[in-house]
Every structure is written in C-alpha cells, then in structure tokens.
Image (cartoon, rainbow, N blue to C red; front, side, top):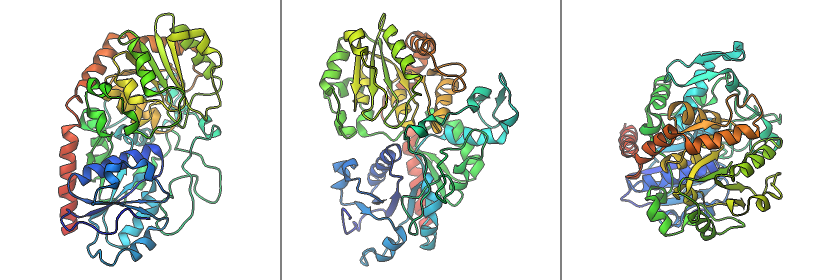
Length: 478
C-alpha cells in the first residue's frame, strides 16, 4: 500500500522515516515529516500497519509524501519502483527500533539518523544514574549526577520505579522475530518468548546508548529552552551531532490560546474518539469557572495509578471541590471508575469518560494545574501553555520527565516526597494540587517558560533543522 508512486524531480532528496507504531512515537514522527516536507524533501513513511487515519490529510495529499505499508524493509527496497534511480539521502528511525533495522539501510549505503521521540533529559539521566552505580544507596541518600545540572540529583526513593502498569496491560517493549528490517521489532525482554520486563530499572545500562551507536546523527523531540544541558550531555557522550528539533506538536499548538478557543477544533489535532462530553460542553463548563481554579487530571491512554491509589485520588478531588473545581479524564478501558463522585461534587467536577480535548483544556484560562503521568507529549503541551504540573509518573521516561519538571524547570511538584517508594495517599494528592494552584513561584516560572513559546515553534529548533539538512546533504554527497 502506498500513497504515491512517483517522486517530485524538484525535491531536495528522499528521506525514509521509520516510526514505532505507538501513539507517543507516531505523532512526533508525523510532525517531523511535515517539517521536512516544508524544506522540500520527499518523504517515504515506512510502517507495518495501516495508520492512514492518524495521518493528516495535508500530508496524504502532498505530492512529496509517500506512505508505504511493509513488514519487510529489505524486500520492499529491493522491489521498489525501478523508475526511482536515486538513493535516499538518509533514513530517520525511531531509536527503539533502530537496532533491528539499521543494518538494512547500511547494506544499501543509506545513512541512518536516530530519532528520540521523548526528551533529552530522559536519555541523559538514565545513563547518568548507571554511571553512579546506585546499588549501595540507602533510605535518605541523595547522589549528584556527574555532567548534569546540580539540581538534577538522585534520591533513594527515585530507585523504586514501579511495574504495576504491566499487569494493567500497559504496552511493554516486546521483542519479536520477523523479516530483515522488521518495522515492528524493538527492544524487549531479549527474545525467546520470555516475559517482557519493560524499560530498565534505574542503575541498569541505558539501552538507547547502544541503539544510537550505528547512527550518523541524533534528532531529539525537544528544544534549547527546555533541555540544552541534556542535549549537550547526549552529544558529549555519543560524539555525534545532536539536534533538538521540537517540541513536535501539531500546528494548532503554536496558535495563541485565545485564537484557538475561538474555534473549537482539537479533533483536527488528534483523531476524535468516543466521549461522554463534546468539546463545546467542556469549553462551556470551563467558561463558568474562575481563572486558574481548575485542576485537570489525566494519565494518558495507556497507564494509571495503582488500584489502591485511585480511591485516594477520588477522595482528594472530592475534598478539592470545597475551594476549586476539576476535570478528570478516565479512559474507557480503565479498570477503575469513581462511581458516585459526580453526584457528590455536582457542577464542581467534570468526569470525562473517554477522549478529552486536552489542548483546549490546557489553553483555557480557567485551568490552573495538571495532574499528569508526565508522558513527554503531555508534559510539553502543558509547558507550552504555561500550566504547572503535579507530576505522577508511572513508567519509563515519565520518571525522568518528572525530574526535569520538578527539579530543573521548576514548573511543578512531585505527587509525594517519597514517591514512587511509598503509596500515594489523599493528603499527598490534595496538598500537591493546592501547591500547584497557589505556589506563586511555581506559577510565575510556568508563565515565564510558557511565554517563550508564544511566538510559535522555537527558533532554536528551526535552526537545528537547517543544520541537520546541511549535514545530511553533505553526507549524501560525500
């Protein structure tokens, strides 16, 4: 299946893009395709399943964009249109699947560029923790991380990352055998049919270091204003060109909050899914709340707290309504639902069961805080809109994103001081929400950082894309 059969002779060259087919990975890949198209590159997106519904129509209708469905990159490349005589100038590959696919491109002398769809802090801290060998830490210990800003310290409690989400059906990184260059392959439990173990625990080697070893360069979904020290760490460690080319959010994210709210259109940004409230109803409810008074609660589409912590959250939100209001998004597939809570809180709470218009909620002046799992997309969406976060990470990179938010950027607080070692209780959650809503320094810092994005997509990332373009053209000509 392909969206086109011919390339434009006027393009700057063809770039192959190989994403990991998961929401948090796919959306940034689509955005980088759009940015490269604007620089007149021809893009071929290689995927192992039909994701047409997730691709914006502007891409599908571009003569320079080609969508190729294949589970065997090697076989596809050997059989591609004989009319295409020029070799692609590079392949941009999601770092999780680069190890399984780079050899195919190497065989055809196509340079590979690794694309990290999360931020740079995650990568840097994961490696730095391994360097300090934290196995001998005891409760109360704090350890500095060499090469990173002084505020990025490791506490004993940080070592106690949880794995309950794997029992909830959260997607681990599964290893699977397949044809040469299997697009679906990735890191996992080592193959052989063993149980998946998820991301490494703190102190274990950082898989991404090996995953980028074969690459000519590294692109990361971040920017200088968010993560310059961490970009430098990755560059110094790998000895490769490293560019921050994000945050990679849809075009509408770079509009002002006021202009966006004038036209309810979040369904144009992320595909609409089933929900018990329309966008119009959500905005109408927010319009009735005081400025900065609403706490928005969402853990994304794949993870959530433990079943013991959900009732604590329910009680905290009920108590919060004595002074504030909340929106709580609960996924349709969630095993927990706060039955009876809506009747207790009345118009002070909006419980959305299913899909929610997150950008519109974060853009509304009534929204004063975000209880988040700190997935990278959600984290940068909040930062761009100047909304402080109550960080409640669940798995993998989310813990390191939370460290960035709380320790370095100082635009949020952790859900509890000893998290994730201790279970989160009602008082932790309520105290955290009140601090996010009322702490003047956190609110001031959030507004200051959000203001840096009011002019649109970061200038540093545009410059990085230009530098990457020059680099890859030079490498292709060599």
